[in-house]
Each structure stands twice: as structure tokens, then as C-alpha cells.
Image 1 (cartoon, helix red, strand yellow):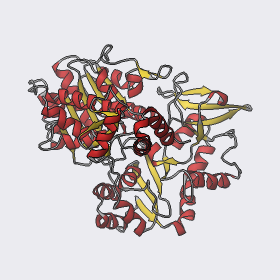
Image 2 (cartoon, helix red, strand yellow):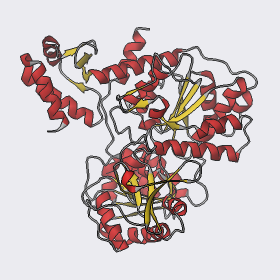
Image 3 (cartoon, helix red, strand yellow):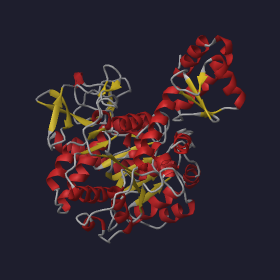
Image 4 (cartoon, one colour):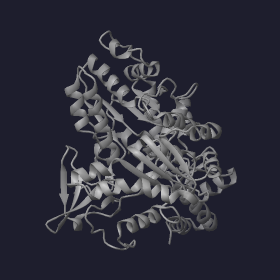
Length: 537
């Protein structure tokens, strides 16, 4: 029995007066939740009948479903969105603080006006939302903003990201930024970078009891919290973070609002960006970075392609792809495998032939192979079968992962081992003994017995969703041969922007046009809650 079916039956049994209606609405609402929606639209008579039988209420604490305006939601989602809206408005409504003279050198740099504005926003507001595409200097902006804040007074700074992989990348990017430029408070910033963690760990997720240890009664010890890759933050995680912030704490959300939304329900960054626009309830908190700094030299194609994909501009996308750029290439499925294989072979051989596991992981991190789907033609499973054939080993999906130099991707969190969903390691054999090797975050390795690992899979190829928060020099993006429900503009943009230097895309021109024309549309209640809360304050 599926989750929607189980919830529908539970609701129908609990409210027999409207058994058929509760079963239907319960199934629809649960299915919508699995698709990422937090609410569904329903006509007034449905709201009235559900409220009359007790299945819904205007108060989320009194019924399993909540009715507000024309929206229906599971009460747990409604509570999260209401809490998030109230917390964001409180942060955004705090009086703006004028920068003092010690902060001005960090604000008025003048090389990038959008970065200057973003730094000023962090300095002046308790809520700052910094968004921008790849290479627009989000890390540089954060470092400048934190330096400006520290120039005013000492701060307890906490850095976090939604996943372990994204947290590691945040830590590395901050440390690289500190290596490139002298910051007056580099010791404090290095300490904050070294402690960068996942949002779950930051606010004390306890898997044993299924809740966070930190909250209103026991808040986080921090003066300023920065959350990177905020597009990956779902509504429940965002609400839990808001509950855990102490009074007077500042919150900085950093991300790319054109990327895929969170895997779980909600589209928090998208909604916050919309509310922070002109005339919105969070107006004044948004800073959009517009100047691209990262890709240089030969990466002209990527600099042209990414903005076109972001806007869904089919003509500009085709101009970029047909411009003869060496860093971007597209090939149709019918001719794709020889090209893909030629691209994969030196990379795979470099991993397999590495002298040690640390070198193998370094080689592994140079490329990402991303598929839209897990099963079917040109899927993760299909590409893994092709790679296994290249390696001369027949391994089906049920076979053990015991093979020297095989990449392994963790698919379930294990807090005891310090492994998170999305962590990438490699199996390595020494004197006949196989060890699972993972980066330790300090430039070294952790060695674990394969039998101790949580759920995992071969990691040569992964989905675009799992690659969020990652980047590599080269990326292969593989679309399904026919239009698939998961293939949309946000997925393609997210995949391509994982590349720092070059990208190979599999799919024909017509398929690309169809994918670019489709956007991820999630129904959420956060904007309605923000409007509602703003009207009462």
C-alpha cells in the first residue's frame, strides 16, 4: 500500500461521516505532498464539508488538515509555513541598521555594484537573501559581508547547508576565498568555515526521537547564521531553523533561485525571493548578484549558456550551442554513446589506476555524470550497466559492491558513522582487505568496513537531484530520450551549472526546446501565510 493510500484510509476511518470525501481528498493531498506541494486548491463546499465533519479546521492544532483561504494543507505543513512566515517577517521587520565607518571599506569596493549592494543588505538587515547564478561571487560576497559585520563587533557565526556534500563544498569555498584574499578577521572566518555543517546537525536533529533538540526553549548559540544552497531547503527544515534562532540573531540565505527546489515539500527560496521583491512582504531583504566572475578563458560557452537556460530562452540556448564553443557540446541520443564513452574512458581509468584512495577520490571529483532518471533508457541504471561493461564486469543491481576502486554513493544518513545521504567514497583493496574510504574534511581519509556502511550504491553516475550542492570541472548531462515528467528547465539549468569548465549534453534540439519550455510548478502556502501575517502586524 502506498503512502497516499494509507493516509487516505486512515483519514476515512477517523471521519466516517464524510468517509468517501476524506479518502479522496486525503489521497490527493498526500500525492501532492510527494510531488513537492504543501497545499492544494479546493472549492468552498469541500472546505465546508471537511470542517463540518472535523477533518479540517482553521486552527492547525485542532484537525489533521488545515483550511485557509482557498487552500487545503496537512496541518503539519500549515504549522511549518505559518511559523516560517511569522519568523521571516519578524526578521525582515527589524529596524535597518546604518553601517558604521569601520564597515564602509567592505561595502564600497566598487568592482561589482551588485556585490556591494548584497554586502550592505547583510550589514543593514537581520534577514538577507543573496541569490545569483554560478560564478557571480556568492562566496566572495559572504566573506565580505562577514568581514564587515566583524569590523563592527565580535560575532558568533555559524555556517550551514542542507546536505553534507553542500556543507563540505561551502567549507572548501570559504577556505579558498580566504586563501585568495587577506581578510582582517581570517582566523574567526576559518574557524567558522571549519565548523560548517548541515542544517540538521546545526539545530540538533535526533533520529532516535524524530525531532530537533534546538528550538524556542533551547535556541541555537549564534549571532549570525548563513545557509548556503538555500534552494535545497524544504519548508520543514526552514521552519525548524527559524524556531531555533535566538532573539536578535541574523539570517543570511544564499543560493540560486533558478535551480531545482528541495527534494522534500516546498519551494522556500523561490517564495522568499518573490516576497522580497518590489512591494512584497519581505521587501528590502533581497540582493541579486548579476556579474559573472568564475568562468574565464575558454569557458565562454558556459558563460553564455547558463543565463539562457535560466531564462528559458530557447533561441539564446541554440545560439550558445551552435557557436562552436569548445566548452559546451550537445549530441543526439542516436550518436551519443561513442562520444560519451570517449569522454568517460580517461576519467574512469584515472580513478581505477590511482595510486591510493585519496588520489582516486580526487580524480573522481573531476567529473559528474548526471541523469534525469534512475531507471529506463539513458538512466543512472543504464549508464552503470554500460560502465560495468567497459570495465569488463557484469554486475546486476542486486550484486554486492565489492570491487577495488569502485565509487560508492551513500543513500541514507548514518549519524553514528558521520555519513550523510549523498556522501561519495571509494572502495579500496590493500593486501586483500577491502576498505570504504571517505574524505574526513581535513584533507585525509576515513576508513570503514564495507559491512558497516548504511544504504549505498555504485557512484559513477547519479541523478541531477542528488548532485545539487556539487560541482566538477566537467559534467555530462543526460536527458531521457523522450520527454519525462522530471525533465524541466530547472533540472537542466541545475545540471549544466554544476560544471566549472565544460559540459557535454545528450539530447536532440527538439527535446531541449521541450524541456526548457517546462517549469517546476509547486503549489505552496508560504506566500499566502506571509501576506496573512503581514496584514495582522
